[in-house]
Image 1 (tube, rainbow, N blue to C red):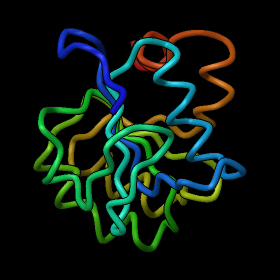
Image 2 (cartoon, one colour):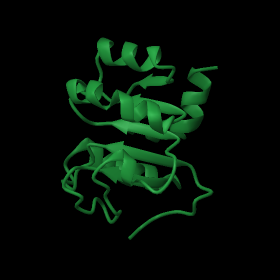
Image 3 (cartoon, rainbow, N blue to C red):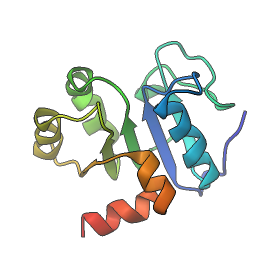
Length: 136
């Protein structure tokens, strides 16, 4: 299994796919290449791009600084209580996983939201740095 030390930045990718054609798979690979500890999350629990996959956010072995969503926004709304409990630094809503209702629910719960594509952010820099700049 691939993984970085626990001192590296952390990301949980909800909706991660083992299918290399999927954006969520490319995000797993991209974050790992940037030095992140990556926790793919999918109900199947199947390995994603060489990383151990977890069935739920509650199963990850630490706090994710970024929780990146690649799921339908209706499912995202169902995940709000779990996201709030986890207290990430940022919840990242990728295209197709975003909605005004979900963004508002997350912000109303006190979470910082990034509504943009992880893959674009990874191509131009460190997503955590970009999120901090965006929210300062």
